[in-house]
Length: 418
Image (cartoon, rainbow, N blue to C red; front, side, top):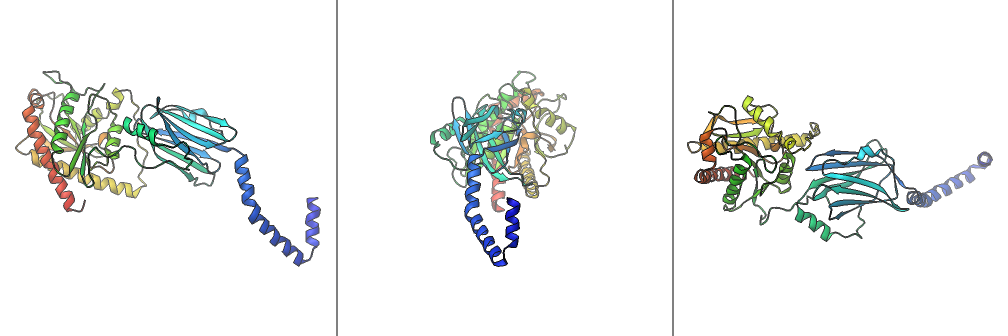
C-alpha cells in the first residue's frame, strides 16, 4: 500500500505535490513535538553507563542517559542520605560501575512506580551536592547527570534538611558550597585557615623525652595562633580541627576552600633520625623536592591518610586547563611570599634550620587557589626543641611573630590590589 501511495503521488501534477508537501510540513510542526513528548512520557529513560571517583572529602558520580533527565535532590537525616528523584528510568549498567566509595557507604537505585525512579546515596557523614547538573554528551549520545558531593558540617546538613521543599521539582540542585563562612566573618575580612597537623588515630611524632604526641603540640599552637589572629581587625582565623579528631589531607584542603580562606597554615612538629637538627622550617609545595630532607618529610606526611585506613586517590590530570595552571602558579608565588614573610619575622627571634625555606609535594598544600605553607615549628626528636614546643612563653612569642608576618603579607597583597 505504501508503494502504491508513492506511485500515486508521483503521477500527480506538481501543484498537488507542492500542496501536499506544504501540508506535511505544517503537520510536522504541529504534531511532532506532541509525539516526542508522548514518547518521552511513555518510554522510560535509559541509564546506560555510570562511574564514581573521589575520596572522603569530594566524590563525583556521573550517570549517562539516552536523553535529558529531569531530576530533583533531597536530603534525609538519621542516617544522612541524598535522594535523587527521576522519571521512569531503566538502569542498564553493571552494579559494579556504581559501587559505593569515597563519601558514600551505600548506593541504591531502582524503580519507584510506573512513572518514577530513585537513587539513594547513603553517606559516611554530612554531605551536600555542591554541583548537580545535566549536560549534553560531547559525542551526541545523550546526556549525563553529574553529581559532585562535598563533606559539610552537621549544622549545615541539618539546615539543608530543615529548609528543603519536597514539592520542589527543579531540574537541578543548588550549586553553591554548603559550608558557611566562618562565624562572625565580615565582608572583606582576610580569612585564614589554621591547620593543626595530625589528630585522632594519627598521633604524629612522639617527643624524645616527654613522649608528647605531635597532635597535641600542633593543636595547642593552632588554638593560640587562631586566638591571636582574631584579635587583629580585618582578620578572621578558624581551625580546621578544634579537638582530637582525624581529618584526611583532602578534608583539610576542602575545609579551607569551602570557607574561602585567603591563607592556609598547616602546623607540624616532626621527628628526624638526626637528633641534633633543630629549629623551624617553612615548606611550600612543589612537584620536585628541594632536598632529601624535604622529600622524606613530605612522604611521611602524605602517609597520614593510610594510618587511618583512608584510600589515597590521585587527582585527575588537569594540565589542559590553562586557567587552573595559571591560578596554581600565582598561588605558589603568594605561598613563597608568605614563607619569606614568616622567616623574616623569625630572624634572630626563633631558631631555624639551615636553608629554612624548603619545598616538596605535600598533599595538604595542594589547594590550587589558596596560598599555603607547612610550618615545622621544631623537631620533637631534639630535646631542646621539645622543651620549647611545650613552653607557653615560647609559644606566645612565636605566635606573635607569626601574626606580624601574616599582617605584613596581608598588607602587601592589599597594596597590590588583592
